[in-house]
Image 1 (cartoon, rainbow, N blue to C red):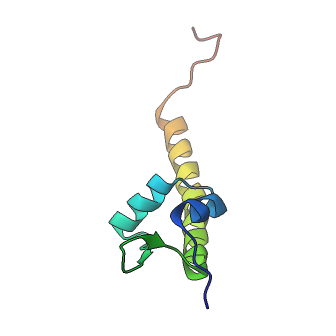
Image 2: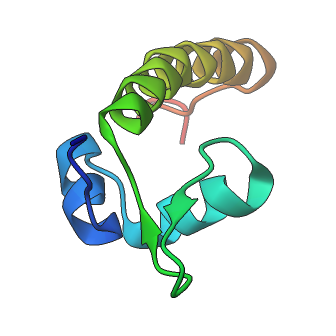
Image 3: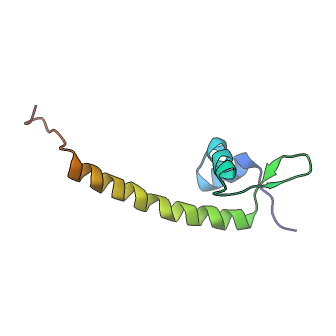
Length: 80
């Protein structure tokens, strides 16, 4: 039988909040499985998907920072 993770447990494994998992579920980025009661749960397959999502996130942050540095002048103490 495949391991099931509750949202809080799964969030700790991937360093994300339950709220982020809920958002990803709503947006279809990482759809949770549901028990007949409606409770969400995640599996090792979800873990692999989440790790792939995580690998993509830092690139976006780096590109944003590069764009910010090009379009905005950062003031140093000499510039004030």
